[in-house]
Amino acid sequence: MLKKSLVVLTMLTTFVAASEMELVLEVGRDNTELSAQSQSKIDATESATDKLINEFKVVSKQVEGLKLYNAQKRIQIQAQLDLMDQYDEQLVQVVIMQRQIPPLAQRMLEGLEKYVNLDTPFHIEERKQRLDLVRASLSNPKVTASEQVRQILEAYNIEAEYGRKLDAYDETIVLDGQEVVVNILRVGRLGMFFQSKDERKTGYYDNETGTWEELPGSYRVTVRDGIRMAQKLAPMDIMMLPVVYRGEAS
Image 1 (cartoon, rainbow, N blue to C red):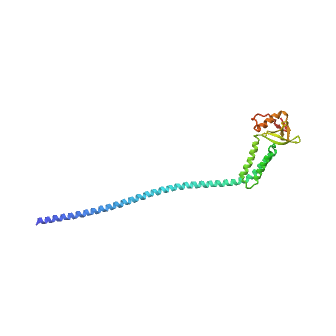
Image 2 (cartoon, rainbow, N blue to C red):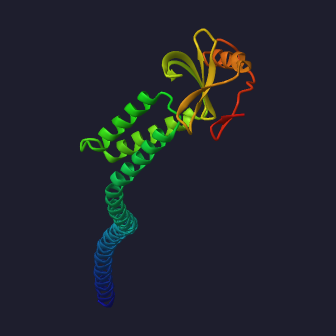
Image 3 (cartoon, rainbow, N blue to C red):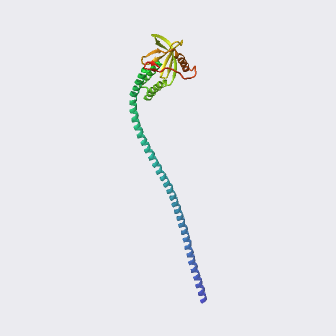
């Protein structure tokens, strides 16, 4: 009887132990599942956190880039505003200059006219026509101020060029009360000489008296050669010509 009791007790103990073990295992399985679920949640949370961090870094870089871009644009805008202020000042100066140009050009034209009238009378018609064209330009409202200045400066340059050139042309002059067609030799503005077509008469223009005066026959060949050089019919060479001073040829 005792053995049976022991056997029953042993079986009961074994059953209880098995039940407890099963309970422990069940709890372990539950804990494992909970741990797995927690880990999944942790992994998901970490993944979401990493994604947010990455997005924050991208947005931060974009913000920094926008800050730099805006700073550069502010500098550019300020530079443009400063340039606009300079242009405004320049426009004011341009308006002032435009107002001053017409009277200045008029004074320059008057001075050039006086100079031509007092100068040796060579190509006089051509020079006066040029002055008339400039005068018409100055009185024409359709002609810009810059074009008016260009024309008056061009007229000055042409007059200056006359003083550096050797020139020869035909002209009718009054000699001894008679009109005579002669060859004119102009040596810059140093002197103007004539020679009749038959080369019998040679002379010079006296700026003080405004008359043509004859020279000795010794200058006939020199003036003739000078005329040929000016016409490019002979090579350039030294010419021994008189210099007119106080109405006298020396």
